[in-house]
Image (cartoon, rainbow, N blue to C red; front, side, top):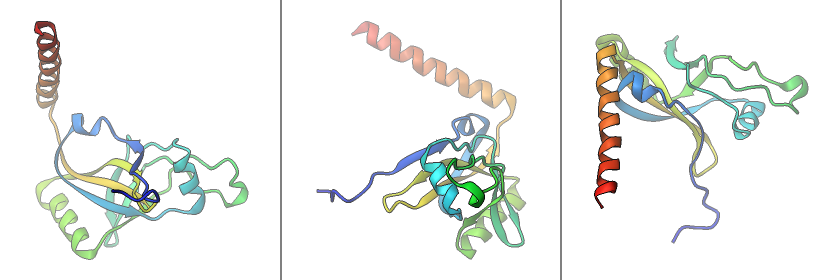
Length: 157
């Protein structure tokens, strides 16, 4: 039986369009370096990662274009809402991700921003390849058919 002190995973921001716009190859859980006011602002649930991506600079991987709004009670210690944030990975993981991006034309896309069981802010990062327009249409057709099939099965009994 689980401890009462154990916290469940709490998703604070999700990139719902990522699975439609990209073909996800692999996912990895990474840490993210945040300031105190950023953590409090994320806990308020107003952050967005929909138009963000990860990129490498000087042998490190950074989260670019993620919006974490300013914390209202943060006064002069507040943070910049769209600043680049460092992702925390091992050197081996960084080399693997950057190799995939350089060789195969993949992109690093954040899928979820959440707090794990220990209360640490984590980011689920995906190695993905962009879909073409016909691929998007095909996935939309599959989704519509599965929805219609569910309706038909419920109607039949």
